Image (spheres, rainbow, N blue to C red):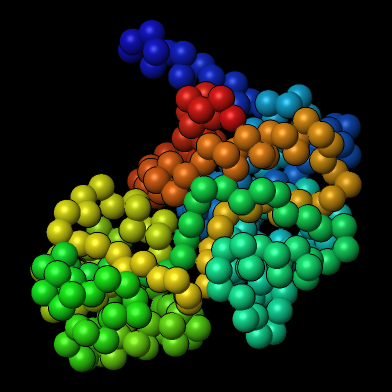
Length: 287
């Protein structure tokens, strides 16, 4: 093992040591608890936030058990949880029966207006998990498609390939494609391979698309409207964080990108400990 690898391993081990899975003794009363929803993205983002907060010198406890996003929000509101990662669009859907905002700034503003008392969100990271259409480069050029608004220029009835069932609001947003049935595949890599072969369109999130190492000959369609924006933010109990911790969260927001988180998520899905990959990222970026 080289010198740099040894340094990285030591730093990662230190972060893991600082972020305990369970509290013991008096720490249980004072530790800030960080939760997640069980997905690879949520566990990884939670590990990044927990590691950054631990570097400020406070006791941080990461929950071993997952909870659904609405339950996590309730736990923060009740004071049973200190912080968890969320995406702004999902938050707004939880908080508002029929949200109208779709642009990133508008969604974040509506989230802030709708949060329960004593609950806040930190600065959004440079991470997007917005749903988007993925198409073969040749098909885009051949049909002169520049954005989602032009999606109807593709042949009608092309199947949509996804890795999970899209929300109804997302299907409504991509109805302009005049697509055929939605088919599911196991992984984002398989989705990209299927789209590259032609005859289908992909429907994936920005984070999943960015997790695929080879995006040759495929391209996502930009959109100025729906689907709803999905920016990564920390949701936290307002009274539990002080200035050093808020600064730490802001540093993460300024450094963490979609590509960064996607790479870490890929490693976690392949079996790596989220705390290890988060610790390596934190040591590299000084967040």
